[in-house]
Image 1 (cartoon, helix red, strand yellow):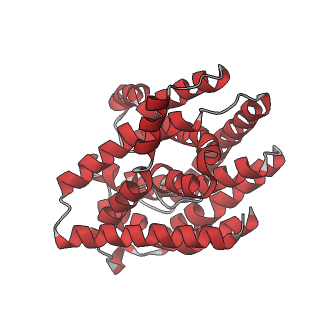
Image 2 (image 1 turned 90 degrees about the horizontal axis):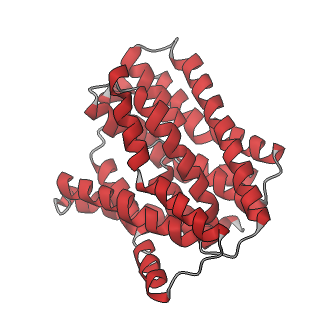
Length: 304
């Protein structure tokens, strides 16, 4: 794929994000509406998009690719967790260290990765991206949430994982794929129409979140920049190396790297608020990482 196509798509996504910022600051998008849009994306649009992507002719090579990507991702997350813990547990206080580590480990794969892959690589890209999203959710709703939760609340996070519709969408999609099931035309069209909502709605939500970011120089220290460097550059490079070691195909590798190279997950802000963590550190982390990805994503693509 020519890098100009990627740059054009990132430009379109940036325009949609700016639109979301303007809508939010104009007062046309309340916090409640933004929350509702987030739920629609997570629990309706994304599962439909995933199921739709699995409606393709079964091939053992595709299944092998999913396995290789999945195994690479498990190793990838383990490396991220270890590296982040080694760095931030010794450089920051408890709550701040957890925010910095979470921000470096977990990308905005759902809201930015899936729309980008869908626009650039179509259903085949989303097919490969679905395994990234599934493993992301498994780690995020077990390890990730445990970084903010008390130990006695972990059962709740496991229940959230089991109830996550994106996990079930992957299961349903695999059944469709492995049995060569052709969905009836009305259902297929329904899934297609819902899938078209993904990119604009996701970018509006990201824009609405960015509109609330207020940068305070007090919280722009070296650890913040180190966390962003890990998230936007160094960890994606590790993903590239792992995929090359496992000889993953070019499309599968590009999809997985784009998902891994997305900026800090907006969940770092949501979890920090919900569990009374260091929100003053989480907000600039999310905002700056998202803005810088407009530069770092094309750079990572060049090395993929």
